[in-house]
Length: 327
Image (tube, rainbow, N blue to C red; front, side):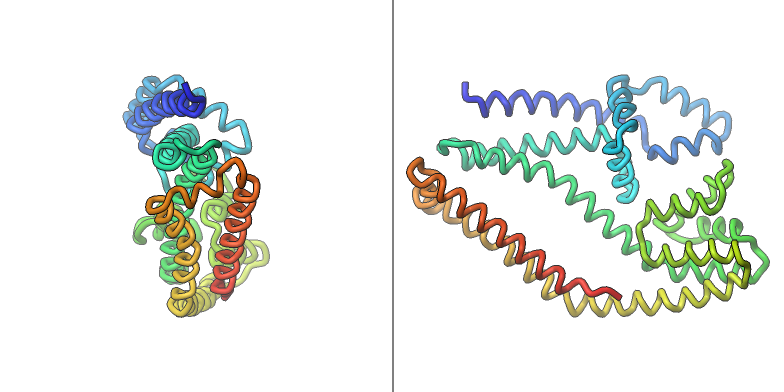
């Protein structure tokens, strides 16, 4: 049996097992790791007992993998990325999805393009693409969530300013934000309030918020609140000024996004066009494309493909940098 088929079958079996583990664990855990730990302190006794019973019924293999990942820096980074995207997944489940995606795309690339090729280059390429598909999806969710958070930040500051002028403390004003504002900003400030209620300082809770939401505007707000707490001053007036600055920055960013959208879509289309042309030629005239992989021309063909891929990536990077204007 071909080695590629053996690898695909073995990897597919492992991926299916991990998928079943992930689905079972996800069905029993609907909250993130941070919310689960905070819930142990904030839930009512009946809810806490129900949560303990659910933890007792958890999948041993899934919990074992998650515990091992939590001890590593890689596992902590994955958990942080999932929290930023607001995905109710654990690191082990995310890795299982990556493996399943790699096996599926690798099999598809092998089935449609690699069966007659002397070397399994398309299978390897499919595996690499499959590993990056979940990561690209998570990055897209992070970007969308960060944009929604930034668009709500000015309104949140106005609500905090009104609360501070009415006599609220900082924590009470943030609690009002968690009640009155829509997600995702309400969810994040609810976590801040919960962390303070279980004993963390406001500075630590705000630093945790900034790690979950890497927003420059939020960094400005957190810095202003920390400085005001150290040296004093009128926090309401400071936040009012910051709110105006953020509104203007959001407006300018929106105008820039409209003006540069043509460049961004042109860069994406030009980056995808060589792949589209190569796929069409592979279907229409496969012997012509096989000249890259024939034993006589294999070395030169692979080098040409690598250089072409590097040039496409460099061009896409340059076009995105041109369109990325800092405000």
